[in-house]
Length: 355
Image 1 (cartoon, rainbow, N blue to C red):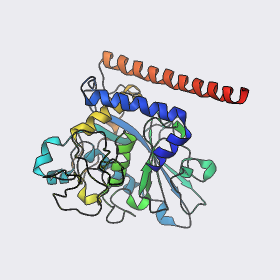
Image 2 (image 1 turned 180 degrees about the vertical axis):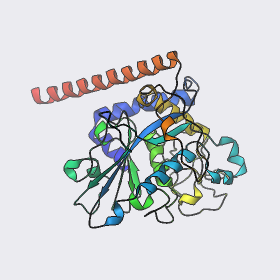
Image 3 (image 1 turned 135 degrees about the vertical axis):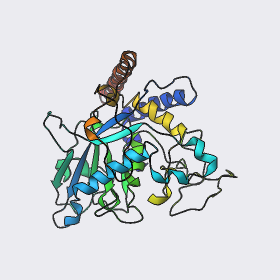
């Protein structure tokens, strides 16, 4: 939210984009618009490991990265074993988001890759001001953010586990940053954040999900813009006991086991149907390029715990021609709207400096 608010203050274009994104999400929530995708979409991922040679542990092993991809594929498909712990009142709300993730097999130039980039840095830590996302500031430059989900893994300061950029922001900073010791389930991953759920949470933001409590500092006046998640006073941490009632949301209380709360990794294990609708609106709107970029066989079902998903099948999504045309139309429309925003900003600047 710090990044979101900073961009709202800095960018008229971001404010306009966010308004359009919210309008679209509302259409899906109210049923005025329905999702057209009918299968699993697989997102190509590039992991930028930005490490200081003075701290070798920051240069995490490939196995730790693969363990994180496994967790993402279980969580976003509701295939995680701990989904069985969802309280009975909310079991009917559990959603398969039908999104999977695979390390990229081709780089932006078409050359073979394992989807992992390792960059040495002289910096001892990074913060939420995006220094890790550019080589010029000691980080790693992103791959095209309309083709890849950029994940940066590094040493974060300020007590940060990770942070993300919502859809609609600048492409050169689009992606997710995660503390190396809160990434994956092996290697440097440390309890209570050794379940890979920090990345699940942050990618939720990347797919346009807000914190479940609405970030209103306990006022109970704002929510996450999802109808089937109860309003709650603030974030939950640690391992709460069900039910935990706030904001007069009894008898079931807070849905603290939702991935978009702040509880320990082993206490979060679900997305809802309403959150799925927001993700659909995002993937068929601002992030439609991930649906139309590849037309390949559907991805295989999520792998069982302890196995690796078949990455060779993770290049895309089969859509009907009419679906593709609609998604292309939406992408073109968003581009035209962004260009209009830029034109308006330039015109405003011209008026200011031209009298």
